[in-house]
Length: 576
Image (cartoon, rainbow, N blue to C red; front, side, top):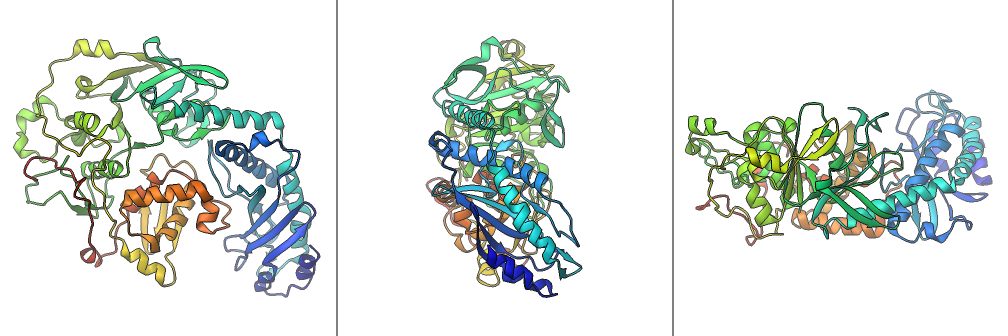
């Protein structure tokens, strides 16, 4: 502690003299570690870590499971944000001078690097803007930040409201218990009665004030057991589920709640007891995305120019092509639940009506719509689908159940829909995919250019803008990955891409599986050997999706190979 005070007193008039602060200092109750020092006041802030033993007064029940530890750290990260807001004076000089902050959590309960637990030690990570006027250090202001504000931040973070913390832990534990029962009940999602599904706005994830709580129809109601007793709600079974209804009645709102149910939510969010299988993936059309050597022949084949689609590459995919590629890539990564919204899908990939079939013969149409692949997806691969349909009845004959939304309330329209149906045209039953549970294709991504970068100065991946990463000189648009909910998750993807660059080699699904297991064991901080304060973990489906969307620099494409496992390659039609 006194060593830090001396170093601050001996700063020169050069901002670079702040580099002498890097190191470890002992304060009453905690250790301060300065892990990274910024180059000037206008650069990204410095990184610091506050570390201590867990308070002896904290009961062991807060730490007994991995889910409880994750919930505890999440709760403390929210305390840390409030402590910074209440304890820090703010701007004191040029650029980021005088600021102390951490990443602001969203509505989800996630593993974040802002607060971690390791061997019964608590670690808080913060950004700190070392103060300067121009590029001249301000030692008095820096002393105030280190010796007054940081101790207040630390003590305030650990002053927890025990009742609120217990509610936070219980909420997460209940959500995990509900999710763990889905497979046993042959469900893919569960929406508890009383849940608030509408959000405040299209740019806010806060619950809408005054929204009507969701109540399940009796025909679709199920009951799941928790330590708090049975909880009833809308159970969505395996197979194909359609969500129908008029405009502005809550179809997409229900789907968005389902797609967000892969993570837990904080008390008061309204979706605390909305849970979905972890392997659910929202798929949409993405005009202009890059596609690299994906087998599209289950959906797109026999192109008029003779292009073979079993190994398809393009730098600028159409809506139908991009969505077909996203489906195949999701299946490769082991997705068990596909989510679609008619509004964000390519119409020609979803279905074709009888009139269009008569006008354009099948042998002149290279696109096989999703409506003709549902049976194969469900029966061969064991994949379920939830689809919002507002204008087309093409999927009704295939649906296992139909949920109607009216004024944000669900009803069971399955029998009503079946009474209106006409016989479904026969499309044949040629096997499309491999055996149930197997990947469609296991590719080794041809990204050795990433490794070459990493052996030089290191591959640099940065958050370029909301939903965009800059990978070397290539910009990567991830705006279609709707299940990314926080900026910290995007920052974590950037760090994981850098970490993966020299390690690419195994097939993508194997690589993601091994990485996921490593993260479960050691966590983001230890795996990446990083003290970055602003990373948040999400499923590795999003990391795989990011890799799949990389647009290779021109001139490299022809020098790459792709490896496949012949035991799991599918055949879209006989003869391929």
